[in-house]
Image (cartoon, rainbow, N blue to C red):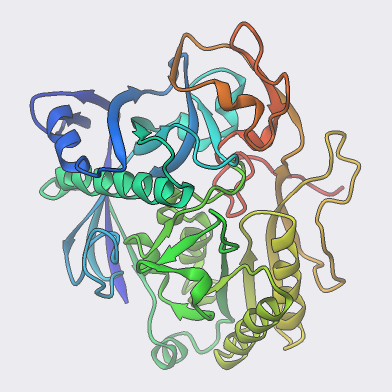
Length: 428
């Protein structure tokens, strides 16, 4: 499968009379946008605002972040199963508005939601302080059940990203990157001497607002399966969860998964990147055994020499991570794991809830328990009050002056377990 991804670099975002991209500036017709994303009787109001890099602005509580993209040629459409029909995506041509993001916020859905600071010490921990953000603050009807609230916000964000993405349909991209994965037999013929490598892509699927969707299907209902990595770039995987903000993969992170992009950079040179195995993170032991058995079986059937495994979340999913590692390594396949750590505020506690001797090549994305101090901002989009209750916050986190003292896990994307951040550690 071959995808041409056209990157249109957005250097600024402004409200304007029409929605368009002109000279690197994204103009948004606010009234038209609100009409497109409105109409859900579960939402009483939506307010649109803008936050740009370097501004003294805090966004919270953040639900999802999505990059606007549009399918300009080829089968299917962006976000299949939600915005478009369930056709196979990942081929043809897609344009992406790089440097722009849709952020959904508003009344808290679940306690595991996050903060984006556009400047100050918090900004260095989140990739979304570097994007030009269109924020949609949604107010639900009273007593709306949490799952309905999450679904309503998810659809608002996806609709907005698709609407804004259309502004890039007829723009000549600033750069075009080509990603291609051949069917197994063709790949073997083309790269007979290169080791075969795949990506084991663990999706957060524990339920209770810890959900991820594949072609519109709740991934806790799937068994592990193979997909082309380019399908992810067209929005085949969508976030719908409220896992801790630091290591949650927002939809933006799936669209821009750096593991996939880095594997493609070396594809055909150092190894043959044969594809991705998507698997779920489960609650019961039986489900964990089933999914990890299936993942190891797919790795063996594909004739792999090595895999990279990433997880999403912590605690319970650490067991899924170790089961995948142990069983795949047991097939004689080399493994590298990507995770983050919950090692206590002093960094002295056990980093993961589970371990195995086969997990001997691990990349860390940082310690989520580290305490950070976030100064007050001139502007707040959303609501500061949840600072004391979101994951990583505690009684007294929100100070009288509007500053926040909390664990790093309150910051969206700060310890991204697919590496969409700058934190790590080196063993000396």
